[in-house]
Length: 254
Ligand SMILES: *[C@@H]1O[C@H](CO)[C@@H](O)[C@H](O)[C@H]1NC(C)=O
Ligand SMILES: *[C@@H]1O[C@H](CO)[C@@H](O)[C@H](O)[C@H]1NC(C)=O
Image 1 (cartoon, protein in one colour):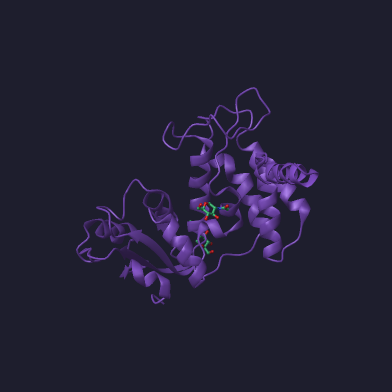
Image 2 (tube, rainbow, N blue to C red):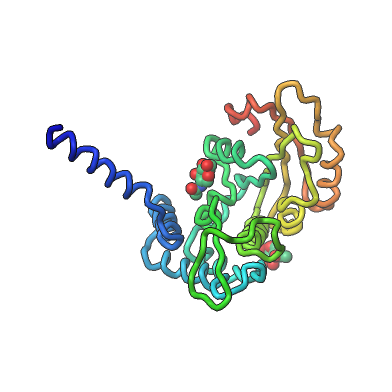
């Protein structure tokens, strides 16, 4: 074997190792923070340190089943000071449509919670602490429904509440028309977001009910959407459109 034939695989292995080496939670979040601020033309390094500190204090040294939603108030406050204002008329909520909605939002210039700094920082992550320890963990944490007040669930509840409370003008929600209950009372959308809409700044909610080919569901035939109308009350205008999945490519709902 030539020397090159030996060295190349070693170099490759080292490079792969560096790429695949799991970042710590702190590095990952700070990197996301810096990426986000840079992309949006916002300064600075310092803020990401502050954001990490507020995030951390919400759950470190706590039993991972005893982190209530309001533990994140300080983080939400810190992030709101750093990042931009809500984008009226382009805000989009979702329930059971995570993949579709993000593709659609990106293509058609809507913004979801995960497009804002707060959601972007923690999208897809799991974290928790342990009482009596300063450490942060990303494995061995309670899952979404293991206990009510777990760090991940509490975060998304409080972040969703804040996002919904800031919704202004005409807002949208993408629901799955291929399931029995597109508007499920147990969803975060129904149980948290709808309850936090503020009719002094928000005018209307338009449901985009995404259907697959052959689905017969309509806005009028779906019982669960009647509950959404009731929950919205009389101060928010309700609209609903069926959007065949194939049409999501076209941004035609505008
Ligand atoms: C979360 O996961 C989805 C699907 O894999 C991906 O498209 C998205 O970029 C991830 N979010 C972040 C902030 O990395
Ligand atoms: C609704 O928005 C108005 C105007 O920004 C604000 O003054 C009020 O406090 C908000 N209400 C709630 C319940 O947050």
